[in-house]
Every structure is written in C-alpha cells, then in structure tokens.
Image (cartoon, rainbow, N blue to C red; front, top):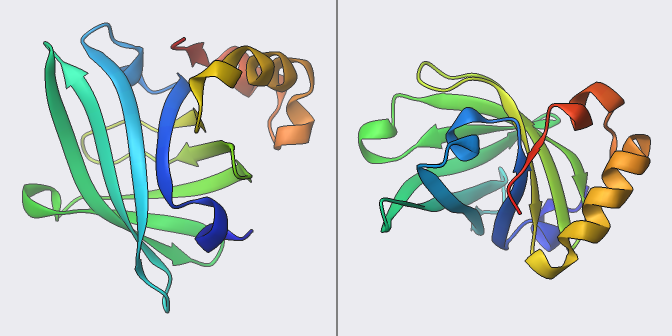
Length: 146
C-alpha cells in the first residue's frame, strides 16, 4: 500500500465498532495524519472529537512495522501503545482494525475524506465486504455515525 500517498490528511470516522465513538458523549471524531519521518515510516497522529461541546484531542505517532502500524501516545499517553492495520486504503476511504490497549478495547473504524459519500460507501461495504477485505460479521458489528 502507498501509505505516504494516501494516508496523510484529515479523515472523518463514519463507522466504528469502538465504544468511545459509539457513545453519544463523543461526537465528530477525526484523525489527521502527517508525515513525521520517511525511514522508518512514521506519521504524526492527531485524533480530535467533541465532548460536551468542547474540542478534545489525543496525539501520538504511528510507526510502520511489517504489515502494521504501532501507535504510541505523546505526553501523558507515551506509555501506551496500540497495534493497528490498514484493511483498505485509497485516496477517499480508509478501513482500519486496531488492537486493545490498557485503556481501550480492540475495534475497527471506517474513515472517509468527505462525508457526502457515506451512503455510497455504506451500501458498497455492506453489499460487498470482501472488496474491502472485510467479512459479513465485521460489517454487522459496525455502528454508522452518520
């Protein structure tokens, strides 16, 4: 996969199995990736969301190791790591699966660049999960935020 070409920029989480995003308390989650280092490949990772009408953020680094990324938090989150893998990636759609940490469960997110295309992706993903490296059980466990 061409991570340097497709991953950088802001992504909107539109479907998830992660309880934090399924909660009514946390709204409009996004992840912004920017290139930190070429070799080894490392991205800056900025997660933003609204909680009680206030913008919250979580920052970290994503280092490519074999077929997966290892996320490590910044600041007080530095001791925490999580492994995540891209299941599907193009210029407009990102599907990722992530492992549990000491403070979060494992899960899966579907992210898009533009929320106007959500119904199109929802229909395609639910109708043809194998095209996106998913199975029917995984798609049934997704909660669509839009």
